[in-house]
Each structure stands twice: as C-alpha cells, then as structure tokens.
Image (tube, rainbow, N blue to C red; front, side, top):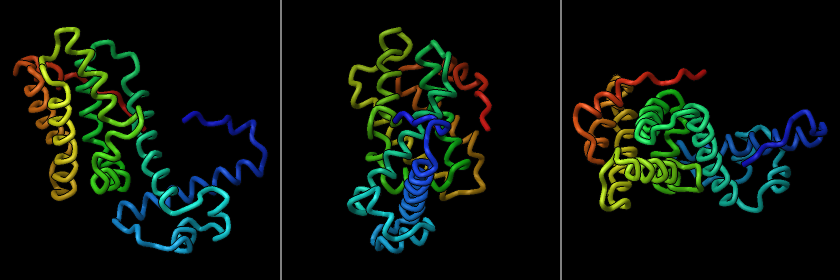
Length: 212
C-alpha cells in the first residue's frame, strides 16, 4: 500500500496516521499472543489512544485484525522487495527470500508469531505475501530451466509447509542457530524443486544482503 509523503501531511493527518499505526501495532501484539477475544477498550488501552478514536479508523475489531494481518504481509513484502532488488536469477531470488524469511523469525519475533498463529492467511494474503512471491519466482525459475516442478500448487504446498514448520521450530528451540537451520531447510526445499545437491549448496552459499 502506497504511503503518503509525511512532509505533505497536516499535523492532524499525521496524528491520525500515528493513531492508526498504534492500533494496528496493538492488534499485532495481541494476535502474536493469541489474544483476540478482547474489547475495544483493551485494544485502545494497549495502543495508548483514546477509546473513541478507534471508530475513526475501524468499524469492528475484526476489521482491525484484518488490517493488522495485511500490514504484516505488506511489511514483509516491502522488505523482501528491497533486499532482493537487482537479483535477476529467479532461483537465487527464491532462495534469498526463503533464507531471509527464516532469519526474520528471530529478528521480529512478535510479527513472526502472527505468521505462526495465522498461518496461510498471512502467507498467501495479497500479492505481497510469501506464497504469491514464491509462485512468481518458482514459475520464473521453471521457465528458465532452473527448477523442475510439474505441479506448481503441490510445490507451493511444500514451500508453505516448510515455512510454517521452520517458524515453529525456531520458536520452540530458541537456542537453535536460526541461520544454519534456515539454510538446511532451504536446501531441502530446493531439492524438492528439482535442484541438484551441488546447485542447492551453491545457491545457499551466496551472501545475503545486510539489513538494519
């Protein structure tokens, strides 16, 4: 979703945008904790905004939680777009996105919990989620002769399953090395997509972009 230039907004508009961000942040925190049976007052108290301001942005709690899920999707998609910018090889783009996603579970544990708790509704939402991006890259890699998959939906089921179980593994075993574990799972996914052992190792050995 395109964001307006903060420099063009009035003070009232900036305040309204901040209130919306605070409400979405509170909803994401509650979702990460598995707490959605809460009142509007609970949400606004956590967001530290006035109770009446809720209805300036959302009609129902369900609408807020949906917006919170979409915000996770958008943030994830925008980050991966930035970090994979300039990668022309679709096999490398897929590999890099998967490896980065695995590492994000530890870097952003609260948003990762939303992914764990809401599963495919997060991964497949909108065009910026992991699975639409993965479909794009996998289809491009198949066309380029880099991947082999006769059933794209079955291949994406493998990707989705690996993504969610990796997140669970990293949350359940906090002492586990997230980078090494993610790369091991990535290698399994690449082999499921018809990549040879040597080529999978080569793709995984490529340096990842740094991010703040």
